[in-house]
Amino acid sequence: LTTASRIAIVVTFNGQEKLLGVPKKERETGEAQAEACLEAIKSWNVEKLVKGLVFDTTASNTGLHRGACVRIEDELEQELVWIACRHHVLEIMLSDVFSLICGSTGSPETILFKRFKKQWRSISLNDFIPAPESIFWHEAPMAVRAPFNDLQLMKVLKEYPHEKVAHAAQAAISRHLWYLSEHLIGLSLFDDRIDTETKKNMVQNFQCPKKQDFSRRIVLSDETPISNVASFVTERTLDIFDVLTLDGKERAQLF
Image 1 (cartoon, rainbow, N blue to C red):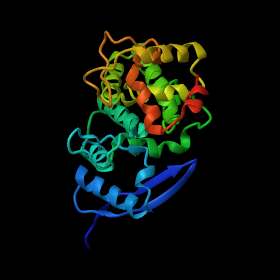
Image 2 (cartoon, helix red, strand yellow):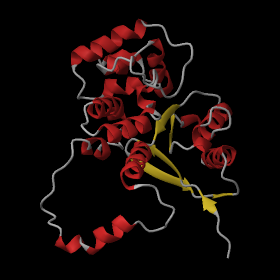
Image 3 (cartoon, rainbow, N blue to C red):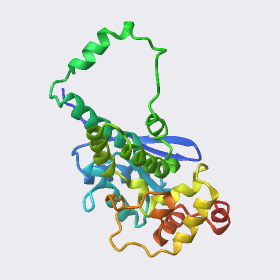
């Protein structure tokens, strides 16, 4: 018997999903990922309709030179919206915190989980107190809420009483702040939790010069202001409207 790695290629539009295919991958590389995706969207004649990419934040997907996202953009000859999978990012944070507390293991079975399984029936399932961080997990699929949620998560971690846990979680999430970049911060304009005053400040900051060293994800330092989402907006933020092809009337409805 032989096994083969496969990639599921799905397109979404207007709340609907369509599975284009689940082709085999001969190699676990960004090039192979890109080739599979491009072949699928071209066979369905939807390459001109592609506006964004949803992906796990692995090196094969996000590499600056050989990553699948860059290769797809180059082939389609257009800039796309990079929608990094929030569940994957939060899983990385959870994994780092778990390893800190429980230690890393190469075993396929974790002793702690086995003990937990044995005691499951004796645990009161009604005695459940949700942690304040749970909101970030449950809203992970909602891209328009990601910038605000990432900002709030960073603030929560700064005040977290367990310093080592907070540091491990901060270090993990800080490597994946895709939604606070100059580009994706524009999604906050679609977030109904952002007050009108903040959105007005975002519009004013469209006049701020774009950063020369543009990156799809940012790295926060201790000096980086994280008061609100408007702090991250520049003139480059407007590019997201061009990618999404929102006309002037549609843009005006946001403000």
